[in-house]
Image (cartoon, rainbow, N blue to C red):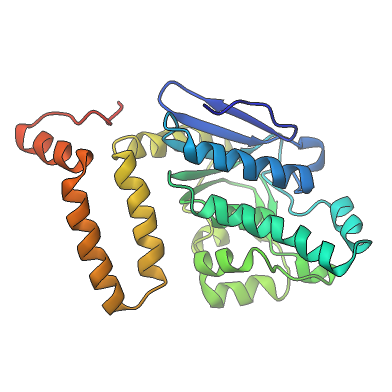
Length: 265
């Protein structure tokens, strides 16, 4: 089971297996420092292994989702050796990779502004709902830095053209543009955010957990391989799925007009 023992996070898991992970540095606009990166990476690993957890919702405490890198963390890294800076930078890369490959749906509850690394966190969500009025920005170049670790996920999310538009100036943009370029899946009024998240959670609770995990791996494989390799891979995976307990139960439930055991209303 996941335990809420983190310095910079709050984690609530309900009876349905929905884990809400709250970035909990509201006085710092939930900016990323070494502790938050470490805590979130550890929590992601624990959530991935916890069979009682089916869905993860990621959000921020207070008015912001995540303001990117903490300036004190940036300053401390300047004083380190190159090897130490590379190692520190890699911790963020590993966190994003862990969240991106989480074998469960990751739903972003984007309650407020997100900059830099915060946009990276949105980019690894499977579904991101933003509150109207939030602002976003890939602001690294305005600090003389690069959106380096987050770039694979941001480009995969919004594409090369939109990445050039947003990364090269570092200018802020609103929720309408964030939705238009694909950073956000949908935008709702702030007071409708929880209702929208619950609607998406309910939809995901109808899906078989094992099939969801396998489908996330399927998407990652097909996105990074050519057609010939993908044809072989997908034929094998579907054959495997027909032999799983979930696959057998799902087919039989459909034929018998029953409800499979994983569906939660």
